[in-house]
Length: 89
Image 1 (cartoon, rainbow, N blue to C red):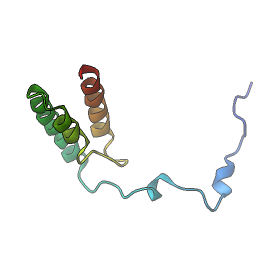
Image 2: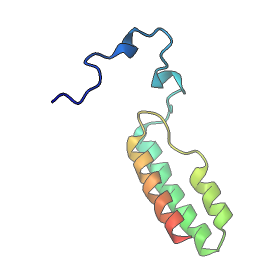
Image 3: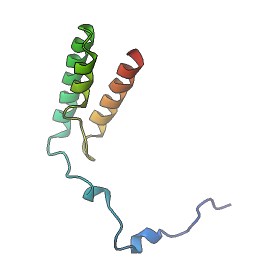
Image 4: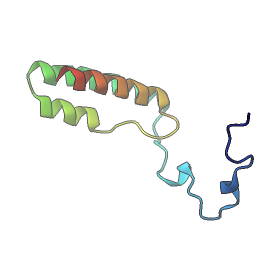
């Protein structure tokens, strides 16, 4: 039994369809640099949490966050750390 509602993608014919690439400019940084910055932020966040500076830790996590299609590994890293941060607070 076919589970798809339509057999063709009718959105391809829509002139006003919004593409993901139109939502934002891609992060110009190299993906390895983005990942390295995410790992460095983790150290800063742990330091802030050790000083009981929860607001500072959250601010550090959210500043210069990775975005775009070339930063998938860094986004996963940040998301995992953010979940562990929220779970520990």
